[in-house]
Image 1: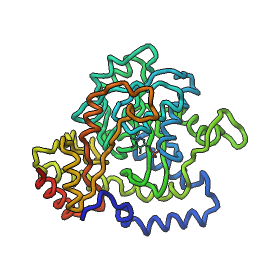
Image 2: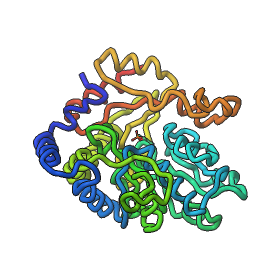
Image 3: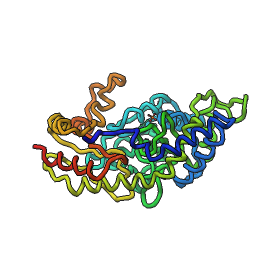
Image 4: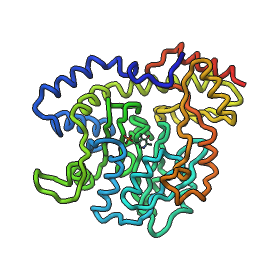
Length: 366
Ligand SMILES: *Cc1c(COP(=O)(O)O)cnc(C)c1O
């Protein structure tokens, strides 16, 4: 029996420290935007190698507030176009549409599942103002080539880091690569809270100041409002818990890499297309996604052996009723990905025996 995920076992090693962190918040006199949020923001900015981190209520809000801040700064206006991978999780796209910016869906590279820099050029128009690069499944989706293209056309690179806390490109962490980044700390992410939580990181102090105000009613100073903001503050309890788990993030990511290495070297079934790993530091393996034309049979085969799997994701954004205006469009690479992907269990609660059980089951298929 190998469940896809057991969130309780994943948090078990940190339980005592988490309970102590919760107690210290309960006993404190600051429940909203207190010392724990400020401390986590400092630690997380330092971890990412950037100058500002601003805690938010969740990952979607983190991304949404970045675009909103660009609008407040006059850098972007309603109707401006933002390039985004067509195969991303829908939240990436919602952050753009919520701001009445126009998402321009770009087919990914089928080998990395990430934005294909070669595809970007043909989507550029006078209204293209930025791109949301999504480090999908934990693999960095940023490169010097991407930066050069952005610089040449005056585009802002925003990172969706929800699945890639701690991943690195040439020694620099996600969250410090683009101009601004949105993180989610949803409980199942590599750095997960015990509820909803998120953060924006950025090296741009002005942008940081605006996001900081926007998350708190648009207020820099109590009872003074510069913007019509929202309430999306990082919760003090979640911040205290995230500080505990941040200290273990590199070790947790190393264990994920170890499991991925075992899968990559020992799964040898020609029916399964394994992921391309990329440089070791660039992947924190949020998900281990394989592709197969016999997905339903493969999933049943693993279910019969007590192995849990998930499909990330079954329906692409352009096929969702929420985006009915895109229903007639065709993105063949994206559709092929959504029709064939399936995620194997990969998490820090797994033992080497669990990993071996999954490998044996994969190799026995077909
Ligand atoms: C989880 C996730 C989000 C949204 O984060 P929430 O905290 O759930 O709002 C955004 N983008 C990607 C790629 C995600 O995986």
